[in-house]
Length: 234
Image 1 (spheres, rainbow, N blue to C red):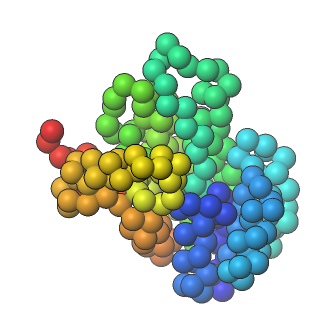
Image 2: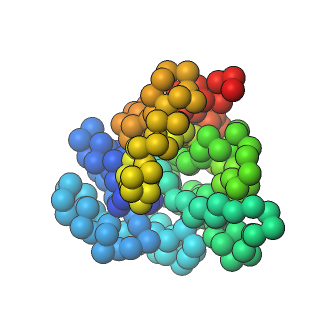
């Protein structure tokens, strides 16, 4: 049985990936900044839990030591949005955003490279904003765009372990529930901006991730799961 570590695997898209991976027969390790949250989901779905905080390198080193008998795949879904204009940038929040998307995953590669099996893979998470610049999405756009380059360069550095990225569009993963009544308007606007005429669902992204785990001849790529939004002419 192949083992997969899902970092950020206790909530939203990470939890959806964890659930599907168990269903598909993987041995799942749910990694999260909140160990309590990881343990709750792990107990529910028949997985195990480990403390993984992309902002705390010591937790990544400890997790790699705990899983030193081998990991086949790692998926890291972390993010720390800082959606402001350039004149409003906060240094610490800027660093946190890069840590979640770029620095943290690179440190995951550092500590798990000796643990990842040669036929395995690392899947990073980007996002459509990296290809759709706009006011107020400066940090999200740059960090998501950087993930594409991280996937390319890590793929060369970690070969034969494969490294790829998934770049979702607006997905109804639960992350937008905080908007309350405004959520519906956001999803409708997103649907209108795609070529397929709908917003994304969690399963659209999960399907792409699970495909990448099995796609043994794909490495260094970014898979766009956004209904053609990048190609929609305004």
